[in-house]
Length: 355
Image 1 (cartoon, rainbow, N blue to C red):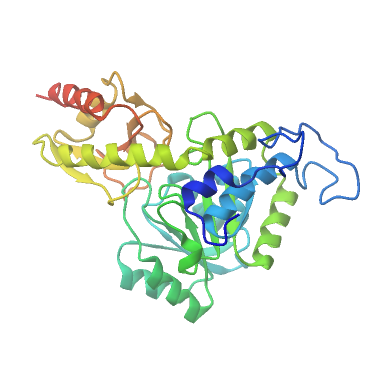
Image 2: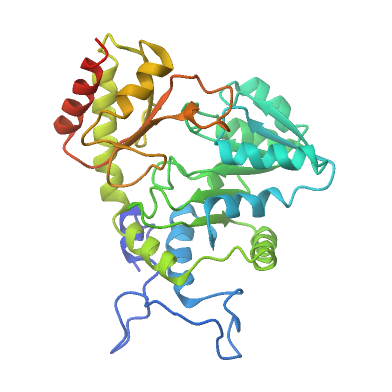
């Protein structure tokens, strides 16, 4: 490697490759084995797998830490949250991802810790809460309302108080945000989304800088058995080779669609944080109108997931577990890599059905 820091796009392509030796494959192969020959780093497939190593190397290099793959984003989140000491305090956004909030509320109800919900874009409120917490769980941008947190201020507050910080970096990806550089202790990903990028993988990951934190997460993964499959990690590593290309194209589309949505009279609210591939907006007519247009589209897929090459959208409050902080009529649009004018024609046609 050159004696200078490589760009993220080069890391995504070059990292996690096998040694350049005669006869060795260019890509890390899929290792389908439940047991490994003794004497190496792992002897049993719950402890490690050579195929995981490639994915973990790529993501770790991109985030500036060491990555561990999990069977899902929620498995990764659970491993971090379970490190909170008994009767401790966890701070989290009141409009965070529904699955994460469900887990946090479940643990709080069972007396594991106290849960304090905050508006993560209110920096003074967030900083005060972090200074009294054991763990600050931060989404930025939040899912789905796209509120942005001040990671630098949160990191400084945690440094003063000793609180641990976990940042869900699924929406931003390490190409747009590296939370470890702002003082985060854990970075969590739903790798099913933008990292793998093709809506065909269920996978999660945790990235750390500190060896003790890495070892603690590795132990949680081993005990929980929340390990990924070899095929899933192989596909995710392959998908990450094009992360920068996909992200650049989808982000350009999202910026243009947000600008056009902001000029349409049927749209009463449109939010885009300035980066990433997700837009949140509301339409005149409330939740009924939002539900209607998301089911009329021909190109944009009405689906729950996000971060794939295809554009998807849905009214988030159609899910009973969605936080009350999320407006009833909010539509989360995950923008893909299609032609932007084709996407806009699809949106315009759907909006026209409201009149």
